[in-house]
Image (tube, rainbow, N blue to C red; front, side, top):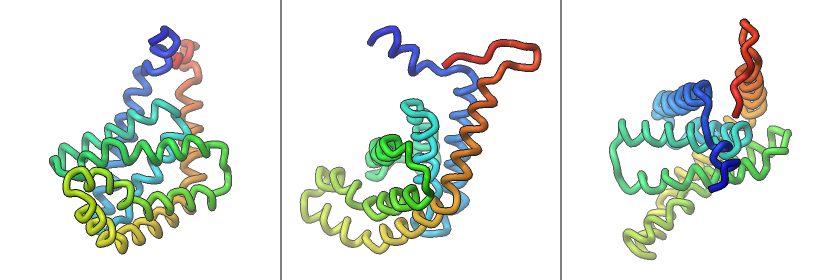
Length: 185
Protein backbone atom coordinates (compact mmCIF):
# COMPACT_ATOMS: atom_id res chain seq x y z
CA UNK A 1 0.00 0.00 0.00
CA UNK A 2 1.46 3.37 -0.99
CA UNK A 3 1.88 6.13 1.56
CA UNK A 4 -0.87 8.15 -0.17
CA UNK A 5 -3.36 5.30 0.21
CA UNK A 6 -2.50 4.88 3.89
CA UNK A 7 -3.17 8.57 4.54
CA UNK A 8 -6.45 8.40 2.66
CA UNK A 9 -7.98 5.93 5.13
CA UNK A 10 -6.50 7.42 8.28
CA UNK A 11 -9.07 9.01 10.52
CA UNK A 12 -8.84 12.24 12.43
CA UNK A 13 -10.05 12.07 16.01
CA UNK A 14 -13.11 14.12 15.07
CA UNK A 15 -13.94 11.57 12.37
CA UNK A 16 -13.64 8.67 14.81
CA UNK A 17 -16.10 10.43 17.09
CA UNK A 18 -18.43 11.39 14.23
CA UNK A 19 -18.46 7.91 12.70
CA UNK A 20 -19.11 6.32 16.08
CA UNK A 21 -22.00 8.69 16.73
CA UNK A 22 -23.46 8.24 13.23
CA UNK A 23 -23.22 4.44 13.42
CA UNK A 24 -24.82 4.52 16.86
CA UNK A 25 -27.58 6.88 15.72
CA UNK A 26 -28.31 4.62 12.76
CA UNK A 27 -28.60 1.64 15.07
CA UNK A 28 -30.81 3.55 17.55
CA UNK A 29 -33.11 4.71 14.74
CA UNK A 30 -33.36 1.16 13.39
CA UNK A 31 -34.23 -0.22 16.82
CA UNK A 32 -36.77 2.57 17.38
CA UNK A 33 -38.49 1.62 14.11
CA UNK A 34 -38.30 -2.15 14.69
CA UNK A 35 -42.07 -2.35 15.18
CA UNK A 36 -42.57 -1.51 11.51
CA UNK A 37 -41.73 -4.66 9.56
CA UNK A 38 -38.82 -3.99 7.18
CA UNK A 39 -39.26 -0.22 7.32
CA UNK A 40 -36.00 1.22 8.53
CA UNK A 41 -33.70 4.23 8.14
CA UNK A 42 -30.52 2.20 7.63
CA UNK A 43 -30.65 2.27 3.83
CA UNK A 44 -31.03 6.06 3.89
CA UNK A 45 -28.08 6.43 6.26
CA UNK A 46 -25.85 4.09 4.24
CA UNK A 47 -26.52 6.15 1.11
CA UNK A 48 -25.79 9.37 3.00
CA UNK A 49 -22.54 7.97 4.39
CA UNK A 50 -21.41 6.85 0.93
CA UNK A 51 -22.05 10.16 -0.83
CA UNK A 52 -20.64 12.24 2.03
CA UNK A 53 -17.61 10.22 3.15
CA UNK A 54 -16.67 8.07 0.15
CA UNK A 55 -14.43 5.15 1.21
CA UNK A 56 -14.65 6.22 4.83
CA UNK A 57 -18.35 5.30 4.78
CA UNK A 58 -17.28 1.83 5.83
CA UNK A 59 -16.59 3.12 9.34
CA UNK A 60 -20.10 4.27 10.36
CA UNK A 61 -21.61 1.37 8.40
CA UNK A 62 -19.61 -1.20 10.34
CA UNK A 63 -20.19 0.55 13.66
CA UNK A 64 -23.88 -0.03 12.92
CA UNK A 65 -23.25 -3.67 11.94
CA UNK A 66 -21.18 -4.29 15.07
CA UNK A 67 -23.97 -2.88 17.25
CA UNK A 68 -26.43 -5.19 15.49
CA UNK A 69 -24.22 -8.15 16.35
CA UNK A 70 -23.84 -7.05 19.96
CA UNK A 71 -27.59 -6.68 20.53
CA UNK A 72 -28.98 -9.46 18.34
CA UNK A 73 -26.13 -11.97 18.28
CA UNK A 74 -25.04 -13.95 15.25
CA UNK A 75 -27.08 -15.83 12.70
CA UNK A 76 -27.30 -16.36 8.99
CA UNK A 77 -28.29 -12.71 8.56
CA UNK A 78 -24.96 -11.71 10.14
CA UNK A 79 -23.07 -12.89 7.07
CA UNK A 80 -25.37 -10.88 4.81
CA UNK A 81 -24.71 -7.73 6.81
CA UNK A 82 -21.00 -8.04 6.08
CA UNK A 83 -21.58 -7.28 2.39
CA UNK A 84 -25.14 -6.17 1.73
CA UNK A 85 -24.73 -2.60 2.99
CA UNK A 86 -21.59 -2.22 0.89
CA UNK A 87 -23.62 -3.02 -2.23
CA UNK A 88 -25.90 -0.08 -1.47
CA UNK A 89 -22.98 2.16 -0.48
CA UNK A 90 -21.23 1.45 -3.79
CA UNK A 91 -24.39 2.17 -5.79
CA UNK A 92 -24.92 5.44 -3.90
CA UNK A 93 -21.29 6.45 -4.34
CA UNK A 94 -21.50 5.81 -8.08
CA UNK A 95 -24.61 8.02 -8.23
CA UNK A 96 -23.27 10.67 -5.81
CA UNK A 97 -23.74 13.46 -8.36
CA UNK A 98 -27.49 12.86 -8.45
CA UNK A 99 -29.40 15.74 -6.86
CA UNK A 100 -33.09 14.97 -7.35
CA UNK A 101 -34.78 13.30 -4.36
CA UNK A 102 -36.80 11.03 -6.66
CA UNK A 103 -33.60 9.40 -7.92
CA UNK A 104 -32.47 8.64 -4.37
CA UNK A 105 -35.93 7.34 -3.51
CA UNK A 106 -35.86 5.00 -6.52
CA UNK A 107 -32.38 3.71 -5.61
CA UNK A 108 -33.40 3.11 -2.01
CA UNK A 109 -36.67 1.48 -3.05
CA UNK A 110 -34.92 -0.83 -5.51
CA UNK A 111 -32.46 -1.82 -2.81
CA UNK A 112 -35.34 -2.67 -0.46
CA UNK A 113 -37.06 -4.68 -3.17
CA UNK A 114 -33.89 -6.59 -3.96
CA UNK A 115 -32.90 -7.21 -0.33
CA UNK A 116 -34.00 -10.85 -0.36
CA UNK A 117 -32.23 -11.48 -3.66
CA UNK A 118 -29.07 -9.92 -2.26
CA UNK A 119 -29.27 -12.30 0.70
CA UNK A 120 -29.78 -15.32 -1.57
CA UNK A 121 -26.08 -16.10 -2.18
CA UNK A 122 -25.56 -16.92 1.50
CA UNK A 123 -28.79 -18.94 1.54
CA UNK A 124 -27.60 -20.79 -1.57
CA UNK A 125 -24.31 -21.72 0.08
CA UNK A 126 -26.05 -22.85 3.27
CA UNK A 127 -29.04 -24.74 1.90
CA UNK A 128 -28.78 -25.05 -1.86
CA UNK A 129 -31.01 -23.79 -4.69
CA UNK A 130 -34.33 -24.96 -3.23
CA UNK A 131 -33.67 -23.36 0.14
CA UNK A 132 -32.45 -20.08 -1.36
CA UNK A 133 -35.38 -19.85 -3.79
CA UNK A 134 -37.98 -20.73 -1.15
CA UNK A 135 -36.58 -18.23 1.31
CA UNK A 136 -36.37 -15.47 -1.30
CA UNK A 137 -39.91 -16.05 -2.63
CA UNK A 138 -41.42 -16.26 0.85
CA UNK A 139 -39.73 -12.94 1.70
CA UNK A 140 -41.08 -10.99 -1.28
CA UNK A 141 -43.93 -9.38 0.71
CA UNK A 142 -41.34 -8.14 3.22
CA UNK A 143 -39.14 -6.89 0.37
CA UNK A 144 -42.12 -5.00 -1.03
CA UNK A 145 -42.70 -3.32 2.36
CA UNK A 146 -38.97 -2.60 2.50
CA UNK A 147 -39.18 -1.04 -0.97
CA UNK A 148 -42.08 1.25 -0.10
CA UNK A 149 -40.59 2.26 3.25
CA UNK A 150 -37.19 2.98 1.76
CA UNK A 151 -38.73 4.95 -1.11
CA UNK A 152 -40.78 7.21 1.17
CA UNK A 153 -38.00 7.75 3.71
CA UNK A 154 -35.43 8.63 1.03
CA UNK A 155 -37.86 10.83 -0.88
CA UNK A 156 -38.57 12.90 2.23
CA UNK A 157 -35.22 12.89 4.00
CA UNK A 158 -32.26 12.22 1.68
CA UNK A 159 -31.75 15.74 0.34
CA UNK A 160 -32.19 17.65 3.62
CA UNK A 161 -30.06 15.16 5.56
CA UNK A 162 -27.36 15.26 2.89
CA UNK A 163 -27.20 19.04 3.19
CA UNK A 164 -27.07 18.83 6.98
CA UNK A 165 -24.34 16.20 6.96
CA UNK A 166 -22.25 18.11 4.42
CA UNK A 167 -22.67 21.31 6.47
CA UNK A 168 -21.54 19.45 9.60
CA UNK A 169 -18.47 18.14 7.79
CA UNK A 170 -17.55 21.62 6.54
CA UNK A 171 -17.82 22.99 10.10
CA UNK A 172 -15.59 20.22 11.40
CA UNK A 173 -12.87 21.28 8.95
CA UNK A 174 -12.89 24.97 9.95
CA UNK A 175 -10.18 26.33 12.22
CA UNK A 176 -11.05 26.40 15.89
CA UNK A 177 -11.72 29.58 17.84
CA UNK A 178 -8.05 29.93 18.83
CA UNK A 179 -7.06 29.94 15.17
CA UNK A 180 -5.84 26.35 15.25
CA UNK A 181 -5.57 24.81 11.79
CA UNK A 182 -8.30 22.38 10.76
CA UNK A 183 -7.63 18.68 11.04
CA UNK A 184 -6.40 17.17 7.81
CA UNK A 185 -8.00 14.09 6.26
